[in-house]
Length: 524
Image 1 (cartoon, helix red, strand yellow):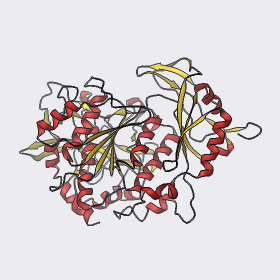
Image 2 (tube, one colour; image 1 turned 120 degrees about the horizontal axis):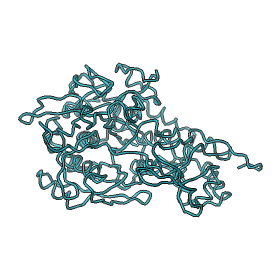
Image 3 (tube, rainbow, N blue to C red; image 1 turned 45 degrees about the horizontal axis):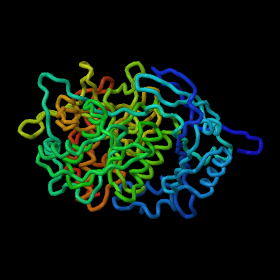
Image 4 (cartoon, rainbow, N blue to C red; image 1 turned 90 degrees about the vertical axis):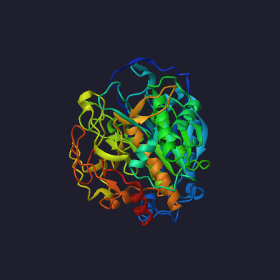
């Protein structure tokens, strides 16, 4: 803040109200909170901008920035960190933690101090999802910080994302249930590899798992149980609710699908609060985890693009750039509400973070097997029965990436030349779903939540085969289209878009032919 005390709006920080909630009171000014400040990248002499670094390398596996060098090349600058320190001292806040590689400074203090520091009213809201601390309008910062800060997250604690799984209703005519192993075999996952030497990171924003459930599940399918480790982020822990229809189902689905198809890989579960701050901190923790070093990260949570602030989306994008530079593949489910991800009244929209150009968006199919082989595979669409459909469409926020230049992506509903979602697909229909084990029960689950860990396991196997991570693999997936690496899904739709030959906004390039894809990626 300058001598006059003048402040400016932080770009992209505008927050609106949450539908279905109401303000009940001002937030307690004495309540202690912790806020994440995400800073811009440093401009190191002789180091190319991160996108310039990535451009010639995205098709060349094995050429990544060593973790030990990342902070120097693409972390935060000391002068930017010092500016935040000075701001905190003047505002009566405390610097709780600094992480130059992740470009984050964690500030601690009272709600009242934060409200004054960022020029915003903080209130308590309540709705169907419970109570939370929230805000409306933009944040304000000293002019000196405006261009240094990418995002300030943690002042608003509204639930940000939802899990993308669906439970198969009971007594559905023709419903079948598979084990992940059956689905992996149908998709020709490469033999002779089980993910050994790799680590799969899973992002979870609620719930937890019970070891007894995992033991029984893996014993039941005859697969060695993988090593599963929990990492706490922002105070969240592995905390099973005991409700098999709640977030525990998401956690179990992710672990059991990924673990069944890559049992040799280590599985690390990053638990975080369901807020934009918690979500970003979990992803950043996973991507920069120098202890467990995941080579692939699976995300089964998300929400419509319009539900995010621009600063949050921009902040996530920088983390996904970090992942690409470090050789970490990030996959995300595309949503379970068809093309109207935010609800029918909002119109067609896509789910974020699946819509990020640096993320592999995962859509869903309905898969029928006969004798272990694929008898039929179409777009997953149970909208008529109210049981969901694969998300997909065109981003209204992210421009069409070069790797989709030949993919025949239509314009977004607002006319924007945007990024098409999803990129790939896999079995997601809950009526052809996966039988899992959660909270002592064995439900059948589907949803695009199942597709992200399925593809994560495939990438882990391929990384093992190649002896190097494929990293930001999306451009190479598009280069492999038409070469036998995908099963093209040409029948069905998701409520707005219709499948057809080649890429489409329902199932992307299609479901995997795993062995063929490994061969293509091995050849570069």
